[in-house]
Length: 453
Image: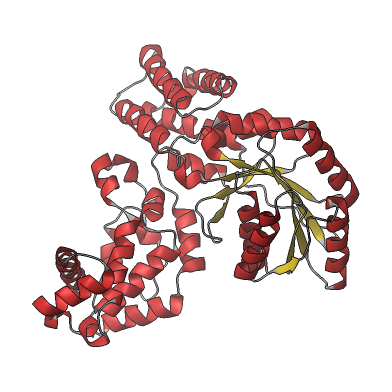
């Protein structure tokens, strides 16, 4: 997300860093570049105008002119205003009510609403230790009910069954009643979506909303629709009292216009980002961290949180201990490391959060492909346990067998073995606490909680 915007702003920032002092002329040039970057990212025109006015007002004042590092001062202003546009702080779900707390999910068809219900249920179960029930009142699309039932089983939460013969309001009331009897903490109600906003849809939503009185009414919207996402959210908010927004498909959105427009246009906070198809791919929205990512300064806090939540620490500690004792790093360990990176959203997601990644040439970024990681995993899985422990035995006929078993070419197997040898050499350097030295050489990585480092 934000690749296009980040690239444009990084160039502007690089130009400013070289300036000994800033005057109205070079500030004017910088503001023009920022304005074009925002418009290309499909940020709403009203938001762009307000943003530029705020930055200009602060930039031409004493704050920048008297600074010893005016370029950095300007960057700080842009960062502060980005944070302000997106809502200053993370707004958590308000679940402080007599159980069950009811969350109503609304949105257009195709925005990823039903998947977001499952993601949110998993988030509340794993992060907040809540007992969750999900129910669908979408009686117009039978597949929606079945889809939610399947997802509920995957994320291991309670599912309230419903049929297309029932009335949406009856389903919602029955689900909440059942939740009370089962001492459920949170009930998430998935509503019907339409291809466009219509009076019938809104009337039905209003009826359900007024009857169940949810503590949270979340609007799920596709971030790839850009500023239209903000306009649709505003239309819904005029009919329903929304409490927040979930932006979906942000992993496929290179522009980020929706994230920068929604808060300003609707006045409602973005509470979550959908960052992939998996039910684990939901992130709490932190404006300060997102602004830092846009400006190429990384997001180490989110990366550290992901490492704490998703990395198997026992396995990591076991590997660190093994390396310290000099017992060697084999292909089975390599496979485990690939799985750990996949659990954290893949290499591309991790790189997006590392400081300084915006300065990498686009060609280098394009080479980081998570599909390559899957291919490497498939090759290792096609090996015998003995081959993983002693890769030096893998010669001609074994390579052909492994390539056939993994659906790859012999060249791919050779490439993996070469990469593995390089990693083995690196791991030898880590013997006796060398990992800390290695991580200090990578910007921001010295803070990473590597077990045993």
